[in-house]
Image (cartoon, rainbow, N blue to C red; front, side):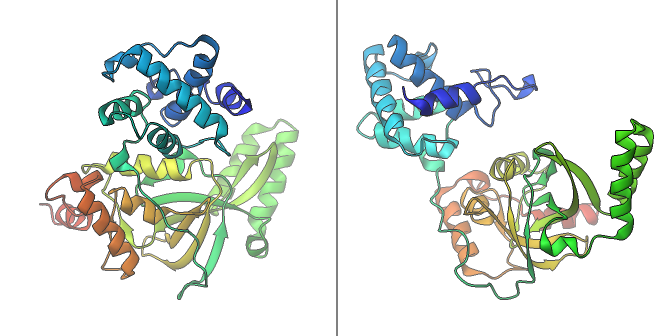
Length: 333
């Protein structure tokens, strides 16, 4: 197949280090859908063989399955750019096989762990056209680590101190410690380097390796404005955290900052590759509109859409609201 599939097969279909996160095709849970489908389409073009195990998910014959893979190979080759996310791959499959039986299409998606039709959401244009009221400043982060996501509405980010806004406000002691740490590492005095880095961390900064260059970065904890996701131990708490991780992992974020909460977290809107993260969380039924602190009508609308589709936590007839759950825990109930 063209370069699109060869690229994905070469760069995505690599076993992850953590075996617990591996899917049936030997890649991480975050990439199994796209990379495994790319691999199987490439394999089909060479051998005309569909993958083993597909029969357990679909009802149609091997001949019919081969027809699907032929169509999907052509569609994938013509897609510019080719699908990179599970949602994009799912939409390509659904569009290409729209005249085929629904159970077969859904079975094929399930085989690759791709989103089913009823779970896909259409997102708006993303970034606001004009400066939002109450905006204080913006942050432009370095790529986000998966471990930085605390739950479905909180993420820790880092901003390079080379950023114009940050460069003028770095504490002198953090700058000096960073220089001394670099010198200590060059001298292989790692104990001293570690002690200096602890001092840097205590000041709210961290030295991070970015493209083989050590950069002093400032730490910010971001509370997503206007939504409240289930707590980790609540139903759908795990799913909410996983979805937010999938949205931000490895990406540079644009954060519009409006406030700071009582826990010292920055309250802001997060945009990632043009996607408004709060919109995605609400439409996928993995957060509530936090009306007590945000009255934006679009957030209420997106929550209602998810309720109507009964997706995510709205599959339950009466899901517990996280603010009520927290109140009960504080009062010992």
